[in-house]
Image (cartoon, rainbow, N blue to C red):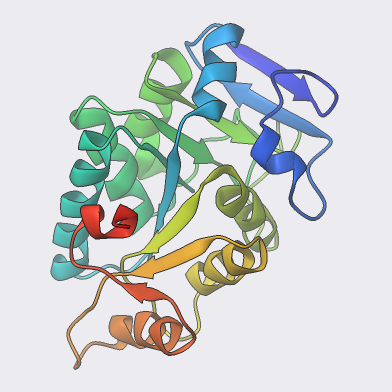
Length: 219
């Protein structure tokens, strides 16, 4: 089911109303009726993000943490990109969880094509949705992705970074989450991997290092 959600509607996610430059319209595709979409936006949510060029270790950690978060009844928010994002969505779906994919294109444009299975399950099923602030037909231009990261951070209660290089769009999401007053967590990585440089830098900036999802919610 295709649809759009205006800022003034009750269904519009309250979390997004609190960020800088909230999108005036959200376009979506989902098999969920609108009342269940409203409920989905109100559930506890974690953004799971990381490198598009993930390592075997990063893939393993993304699966581990996503499964643990699903078991804790968390909605998984990510960007349906290659790498960590795709693993997070796919694991959430496989484990019976709920997940929201925020696109850097129109909701009728599947990108990247290798994540078509994720897209179809969210667009047609009842485990979540794909959303975008960009009108249908919008191509996945490079400058769309940093912009959409504020929505990924905005929809979540906190952000978990699995792997990231020092110069990475993932760090934009983490920065935006911190600016929104949300906790940022990082998974420690191998010291000899360039994909650990971004997470190490975030830890030095105050992000919390965790080795299990439960640690993210410990008192």
